[in-house]
Amino acid sequence: MADFIPVNEPLLAGNERKYVNACIDTGWISSAGPFVGEFEERFAAATGRAHGVAVSNGTAALELAVAALDIGPGDEVILPAFTIISCALAVIRAGATPVLVDSDPDTWNMDPAQVAAKCTPRTKAIMVVHIYGLPVDMDPVLDVAAARGLKIIEDAAEAIGLSYKGRPCGSFGDISAFSFYANKHVTTGEGGMLTTDDSALAERCRSYRNLCFGPRRFVHERLGWNMRMSNIQAALGLAQLEGLDETVERKNRMGQRYFELLSGLDGVQHPLPRTDHAENVYWVYGLVLADDVPIDANEAIRRLADRGIGARPFFWPMHEQPVFRDMGLFPGESYPVAENLGRRGFYLPSGVALSTEQMDRVAEAVREILK
Ligand SMILES: *Cc1c(COP(=O)(O)O)cnc(C)c1O
Figure 1: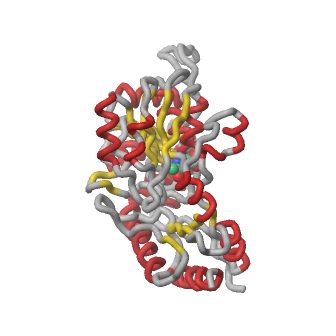
Figure 2: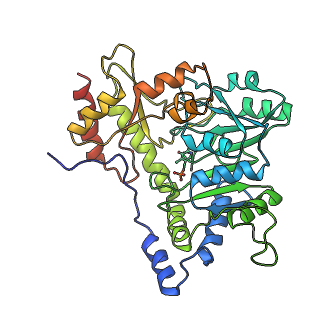
Figure 3: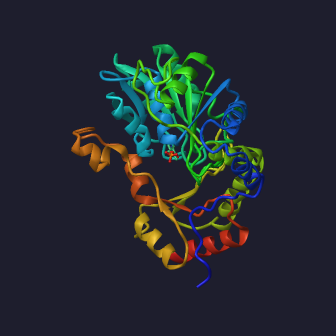
């Protein structure tokens, strides 16, 4: 069998080695090194934001965002049912209540038309999450937030380099969160960032990230976290950021190639190449099996693995998470689009390093397993 094609392989072909070596050569390996500030500044600028606060991962970024907005017990936060657990976890860990919204079946993003009906006097924020390469339709969500004085927390982990109506994703939140995990468009291996235009909010995040040290070191007036990013991670991030335009181009070509190779295939829904407000950046290339296809996503993934191809299931909806059921959350709630995506959706190898030959092999295997 030809080599296994992993679901993700990063591309580290720019200045990554040079900058990481500089950390080793200078001895600056902790978060106190100079790359951290430089990466924060450049990344914030790339999304049109005044401030960037680098953290240890994307989940940490969401937790800090919720804390920095003073969201806690008694508060509700609206978020999509179809997302990664990090989003709901950040709300729950703060003692607040997550309130779910179903997805649009075409874009797989939170359906903005369902947001207003979920607002109550306790609603404090809307957490928007751009999913798999297309943005949430932001304008109607921003309208609801403005009308009710709600904060926007934007999870742009999968949307680095993506735009909505020409404006970069990650510039819409009162505070916006990013991940630099190895499958994101800018990777530091593990890492994350918060961006905002609000300097007071940025300062709170910096303080929370670093144990809330007071002016007298080792004296603390609040409880913080250690969620710092190391200089070595920031070195990687800076080099990755230099390559972002090329990364986005590669992902776009990947999406177009998969779309062409798999066109005319019955029984699968493709990602939309574009909507009225955005071009797909194809963070991952997802497929959703039609109702009349006799296998589900798990079986499709097994069959692809037999052919040497790594595929992954879509997110599993928040209201069906065993951990949340055990906590008594979302009783009797149903989000049919999210439920279908969780059962019938999976994504193909989509890493930045993916070659055209690999895409050809993947597409051939997809055709075989659906015959
Ligand atoms: C990757 C991701 C996260 C979590 O980031 P980590 O760095 O893995 O903690 C959060 N939200 C979304 C939408 C993601 O894709």
